Length: 221
Length: 221
Image 1 (cartoon, helix red, strand yellow):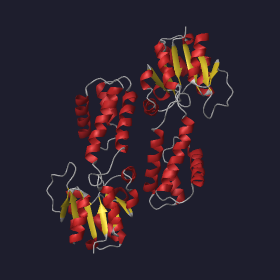
Image 2 (cartoon, helix red, strand yellow):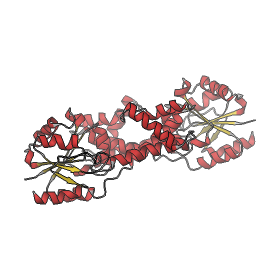
Image 3 (tube, rainbow over the protein chains, first blue to last red):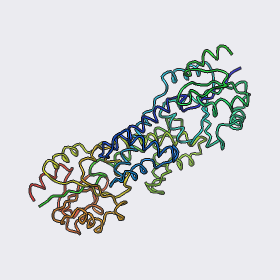
Image 4 (cartoon, chains in turn purple, cyan):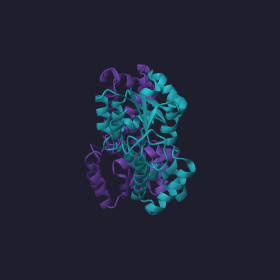
């Protein structure tokens, strides 16, 4: 019997890709608002090149953009960009049906968990900003688990929960991190078709448009 | 003739001490909201001891508080604390009469500057959050000037502006950083009697309750 449901965070509980794009746009607009020369489109393209080159977890994208532009007061523009970027990131909202779905699943007696790649404080921050943290009985973050989402990661989750694979369901948008490795250890997998990876083919046991689709799947099991 | 007016930021343009206290309270309450055991008063006292011991620029106050409390999921509480702390810090508001005073001074033809100790991006962030950044013709931050507010700092400001000391006024709440060293190089000094240092005796040329008091002083010069 299904008892434990694991959720990914980004593009599963909230539109992460959309907010990232918006955060970058708002940051560029804030720089322009403080007097930076150049139009939004050109600066966005330059920023995209920096992100492409340095990776999205590199912490000094805006400093690099200022250096390229040769501005006289880099702190002026960097501070404006970071403030606007953070304001957007802290305004994240869950996909519309997520809070009520999680509440109904709790009412139905399921135990809910998060299984996510990334930095522990950053991932917790998202759950707190989304006002979803209290729904979850535990949060498994790759940083604390010592490995990213792989068969070994999911095996360790099962062991920690004292659960059998056939009592567990993993729900996420990423074939490589959420579906494929969870399926390998026998966990039932549900692919959420959202975000920038939604076109990737899937071997998931089920697919949903959003997590409210879980009720139909759970009824059929 | 007075032409250049320099302003400190913290407790001169906005109630910095008050917001710091509120930010800590909100952080502790957020930890409790996420399930941390202990009452607000006890946790505030423990946090104060950590800040006292490690200094206010130490970045891991909440991690230490979690370690002391021996909680099982430190990232849960640290993320909640940091989010609430930052939300408070980003909600800073200027002292009520500050924006209109700065606008009137600009209308009257004065050139306005900031002279502040600290990290450049952090101090710019405050000006941006306060929506005051655009009023200032330049911002002199100790980090970028290579020295904290001292006679040498103010001499360098005069040189950069191409100004004589008797054309300059420094406005701030701190006797040690704003008044004493500026007075030593011949700048007219105005002490704002606000914040936690307001009780310190002053040798400033003038004192004001808030910066709207500058008009009376400028008229008399």
